[in-house]
Length: 544
Image (cartoon, rainbow, N blue to C red; front, side):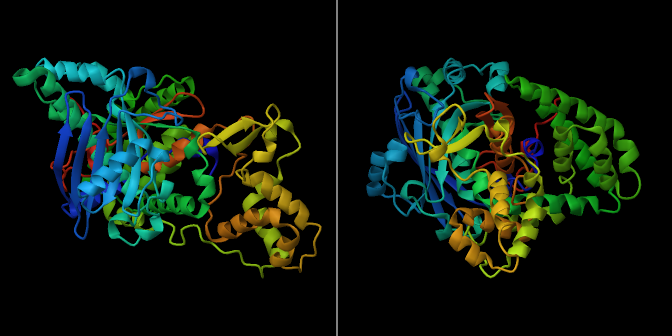
């Protein structure tokens, strides 16, 4: 639970995109495009329908005329190339008109209980025009340019779970298709990807007429949806401690189960080697302009070679996966260790995939403090779960250099320099380690026999910490064991941890505070998805 390790996590069979594609294929979801009223510039509206076993959902997409100078990844942007809503059910014309008046406004719009997710996206300034022009001229776009960018549009926000008046997750979490975390958000991104392909081919046909050609389908599948994610996402894993525990616990249990496999069959070894070889291709294609990430990718390439060289020794005999993981802890970087931990799960869907059903938080953050707990037991819990924090010198300026606050302009989390900016009074409770140390210091002045309720009546400022430590009692992975306000803290590690559970690939940090990724790169499109291709799409094919 250290930030450096969390910032090295990779997608796995338990990642939410893969959970969704497995379900869509297993249940034979039906997809159709029911409206596509777009002009030659890509301005207009489109509707995509998804029929699940029990319900129907619809993507309502709007294309806009966005001048180049207004195209921005920043959350403070006020206009986008396309905006979207995922609707519960099938929209009629009144619904579409209502959405057309509100969805392009995003945060400033008004939404109903039928909207599950709201999103927006911008075209890639480097790639969109190249692809549209090439297809219009009857040619395929340049492969190197496609590989370098990896997407035609990137989302700058995917808002669900009650944001801006849309339906709260608690209202839909009992639906089987949304039982795993973030399934509605993953569904809208999957549908956006289909819309983007349709749109660029439509624009090309409008320009080129009969000479225009569609994008080669193998090429199209390589393209994902880009995403630009900044500090707004970073506090999520702090604010949702029980939920994050369930994600990590499921992954750790999956690793434990595979390490407990006594022998590996030839088929399981072959599948692992296939995924390992395809991971090498993925890592070779992983480009980043950030020096820290470039160094991690270069070391990961070496680590994958070391794994290949070690396979024969580790995978022949008893407990092969346990011995391989044990070796990796001494031989590989954290990036390599975590990549391997994901790879060993690949042959074992029958014992791993069911764990995704327990990754949601059934209480939806509604944990109630036990006021009858003694202060002696509370101090014991604090020492057990926050011992690392009690050892930090919280008077040292470098240990409290940062402060999390909410921006007035966009109501988004921001990170400021505590000793340089006048922001202390606006600080958010996103430093559990420091706050645990403060609570422990006050607790030591009380009688051990007193109860938590009495303590919190006198010290309500410690309520959130007492709640967290009681959560940790049954959720051992609820807390990051690192200082989240130190001068050396890298917020990018928090982003990477969450995005790996989404199933993101090709992390490309632009600073220590925001990152670009790819989603669904390699995935089959609607109409192509089946049980044979719903699983391994995330790993690129090896070209002979």
